[in-house]
Length: 354
Image (cartoon, rainbow, N blue to C red; front, top):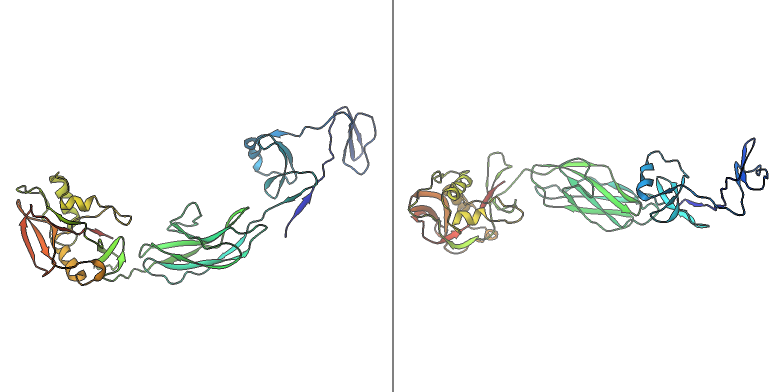
């Protein structure tokens, strides 16, 4: 319910005369007795009263255990203020003091949970004393997310009533905490916290972790993705006639180390491995040139996938060195793998692990 306090100040303090009569105190300059209906009767025809004068900073020190009805003069805003309902409000002659209340919001049960998405929402049961200007949900991998500390936040309209929120960009097999929020002029309030865990089930061809899934390991929660488009239409492997120490990994899981070894042993700009390592795509910057077996899996699992954009007959570099002058590549027209001169310009498709 709206609460209005009408306050008419008629206090004028003057320390000319101070008289005490039982339960009454009088301060005046005419020696008159205080009115018996007042605990304090102040009278003067020549003097005013000075309330305690505080800046905003000085006033805010009083925020702990401030009694309701305390009066001060705020020198920062140049106004008389009163403390009501945990806040300072300007005191205007004959004007009501409106005390804003927070809204009331509940959080709905999370549904539609997948690897990267979920559906939640809330219900603004009451707007408080002023209209709700923002509402939605906040979510995080840590408890009690807020509008200023979260992994994600949605904005789902204004006002009273139920709303639905779509959560996206989630990480598979991860626990999240979510709360509805509602904001009015009094501040932001949160609903109860709900918890959910995203699915760990992946499929080849899924769009996830910045690319397209082409390999899933035995846990079902990790694997490899490739970028959805070529990262170079023709660049060299690099450092011909130079043996790169360590860049000979063939198996799945060796491409990242191969890439590191290539860059440590070859300073040439623009080479295939460097194109991948310098790539920043879809929020990720840990891309690498795939090993021989990793690239073959990409061909086997994604060649026919339209989203992967493997069209025509293209030759792609691997990060696996064959000799000081040659490295492995793959023909994406036939699937055959060969080794050839490091000086040859072939396509590049970056991968990353998740």
